[in-house]
Length: 142
Image (cartoon, rainbow, N blue to C red; front, side, top):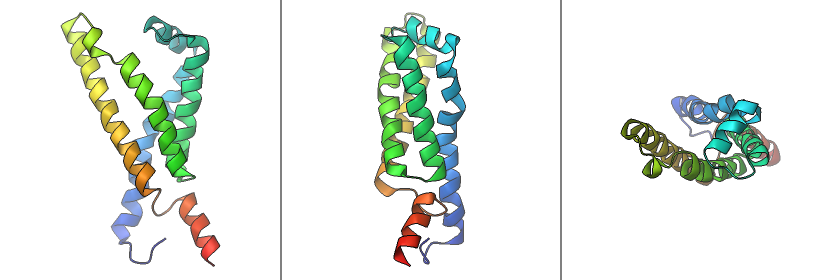
C-alpha cells in the first residue's frame, strides 16, 4: 500500500471494487440454471446451452478477481468481454416493440455502458490498496 494514500482512499477503493463487481458474482449462478439458459435462448443467443454458462463463468471469474483485487486488470477485461455482447444482445432496446419494455431495456443498456466504463477504469488503474495485487507488489519490494 502506498504510504501517501489517505485513510479514506484505503477504504473507499476496495469498497468501490466490491460495489462494482458484486453484481457480477451475485447474478452469475443464474447462467447455470435451465431458466437462465432458456431466457438466453429466447433472446436469440446462439448455442445458449454453451454460451450462457460460459458467460456465467466469465462473469464470476471477472467479478471475483475485481472484488479480491487479484490480477484485477485481467478480471476487468473479463468483465468487458462479458458485458459487450450481453449489452448488445440482451438489452437491444431498439428492437423491442412494446414502448414500456423498450424503456426498461434502454435503462439496462445504459447501466451496462456505465459498467463497461467502470471496468475500463479498473483495467487502467488497477486494484489499489487492500488487494491481493497490492500485497503481491509489497512482498516483491521487500
